[in-house]
Image (cartoon, rainbow, N blue to C red; front, top):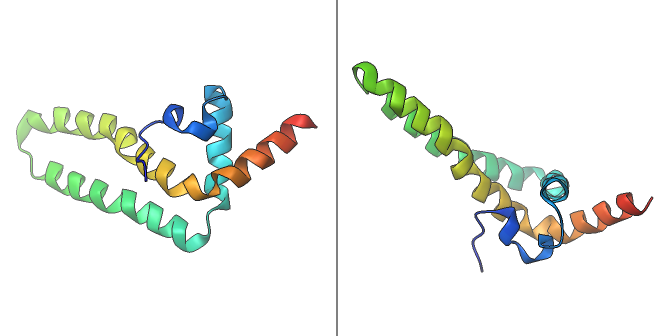
Length: 103
């Protein structure tokens, strides 16, 4: 099983533009059942909370670069989780997208 860090690397989405891939991934995430969506959100939330708890302990002006690094790293950390958790629902989302596009 491959681990994807970018939607560009997913073979099913290679023929679509960036905005089309984003729409398809959004549809796939909406198709996730609630327990899986909860697990996905918890997988993103717990490490982020730990990082911010460590940032609270940083003294002085070093807190600013630490916050900037956490802010920049947030999408880099959460995007692979979103991509890989929504992979099982990608084919359904592509069919839905193609049906909407053909109308």
